[in-house]
Structures are given as C-alpha cells and as structure tokens.
Image 1 (cartoon, rainbow, N blue to C red):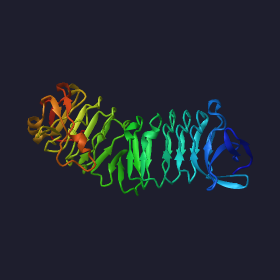
Image 2 (image 1 turned 180 degrees about the horizontal axis):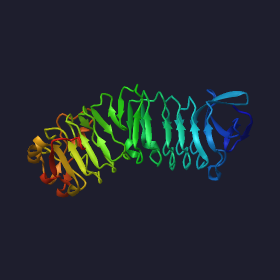
Image 3 (image 1 turned 180 degrees about the vertical axis):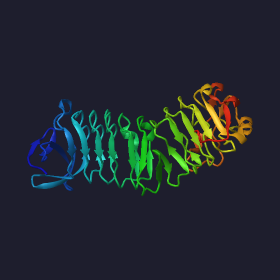
Image 4 (image 1 turned 45 degrees about the vertical axis):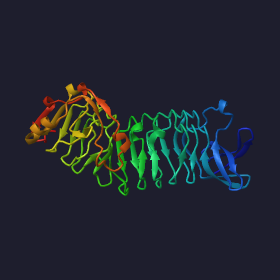
Length: 352
C-alpha cells in the first residue's frame, strides 16, 4: 500500500503515499503493539485541503520495515477537506476522534468497518452533504446524532445485529428507514421503524411524506414517534391501536385529518386519577377526526374538551416508556383541543 515514506517530526511521525497518489499522515500511539492514528499533515492552523474524491484508508501501513495497524482517526485529521467525497474506513478502526471530518462539506458517502467504532465530539461537524452511510455489520448500538449536520441523509439502513438506535429524530431530512430482514429487534414498513413483531411504532422519519397509514396489528405508538413530522397531513390509525400519547400530534402543524378505526376511543391522557380521551393538536380549527359511524356519538361523549394540565396514562405503560416523563404535567390550551364538531362518523374508510 505504501509506495513512498517520509517524516516531519513536529506534525506527525511518518507518512505513506497510497497507490492513487494520496498521502496519509500518522502518529504512533503504541510502539509495543504497532498501533497508529491517522492525523493531519502540518500544524492544524495551516491545514489546507489535500484529499480528494474517494479515499480508502488502509487497515495497515508499513514504515521503516514495520507494519502498523490503523486503529484511530485523530482529531481534525480531515478538517476542511472540501474535495473529499467518499471515505471507506478500515477493519480494525476503533475510534474517530473530535471533529475528525469537520468542514468536509462535499463528503457524500461513508462506509464503516464491521467492528464497533466510537466517536468523539463533532466528528462530522458541518458535513452537510452526507447522503450514504453504511453502518458496521457487527454494531449493536448506534447514535444517529453524529450525522445531525447532514442535509442530504434521507435514508438509513439498520444492519442485522443492531439492537438499539438513538436520536433518529436529530435527522431533519431523514425520510426513510429500512431494516435488514435478519435483524431481530426491528422491522420497517413503508419507511417507518417498528419493533420486530410490528406491534409498536418506534419512529416516523421527520421528512416522511404526507400520508401515514399505520398497519393493522400495531398496538402502541411510542412517545415522540411522530414528533417533528411536519409534512404529515393525514394519519390513519388501525382498530388494533391501544396506546397513544395525547401529545403525539401536538407538533404536526400541517396535519388535517386523523382517522381512528377503532370503535372504542383510546384513553390517552390523565388528570389526577381520571383517564380521558384527549388529543392535543397544533390548531384545532384545521383538523378533522374521522371515526366509525356507529361510534361517532361515543367519541363525542368521550372527548375531553376542558383545557388544563394533563399527564400520560401512568398505569400499564408499554415496555420502554419513561415512567418519570409520564407523571410530568403539560398544559393543553383550548385552541389545541379537538371539540365534538371536529368528529365525523364514516361508514367506509376506503376513501382515506
């Protein structure tokens, strides 16, 4: 892999030139174990763009007749490399340090190694163009917050072994989630993330489309699953749904239609010990609620229209729900509450 070697003591321990002509710079972090981190070429204040196009970081490099294993990308190693468009990271890499790719504004694609990698602060700070990410095949957890600066990351695929993924809502432009069919924790339907049995909706991407048709069999919508989905104007809920937060629609400013196919209103909120059917919305004057015709009167009688402080239902919380959050009261104003004139009975939901 290394064709030319050189050394500049004050900036790095050695450098190697790849077969495509690009030169990488390294610091030795363990002489005993022959481990190195990739670093920047000169003093950080003088760093200028040096990388371009696709860069494949090697798993090992050779210098002075020794083979070193590349285990880290150092702080600001690729800072402001605006001509870098693709990066393939090597097997054996275990850490990407603070602001390693800061300002790589044209970086589009990243392929991570199969093994777990830890991230420092602001690893991809101001990397606005990341559009394609391949997560490690052996990763069990991942925090999407590391990509929160990207304006082009619209789709993410969850690999087979991933058991926990957090901060999906930090991705403002995410519109679709897919899941490896061999994953035992998650599944995806129409770009939306559910638990493996398909009974709990976990996350609707913030840049999802205009209509959401929740599949039959879904029993729970996890708190915040619809948060920030400002494109949604129609949400259709199945008859199987049994748990829904009264605040789930509160931030959906373009929501116009809610369809509830169940003949029994869901108890969504609690005031003291009294449970009630309440839906907090962005603007009550712009939303209609459609329910089965034979249940229209029941929905109207059950609907809570008294403004005040409410909490989540504190009994029988679904698995994974935050019980501390459940008891925090939130004020619901009259302008945010549906009233009985918003409810319409329908004999046939096929038009929706």
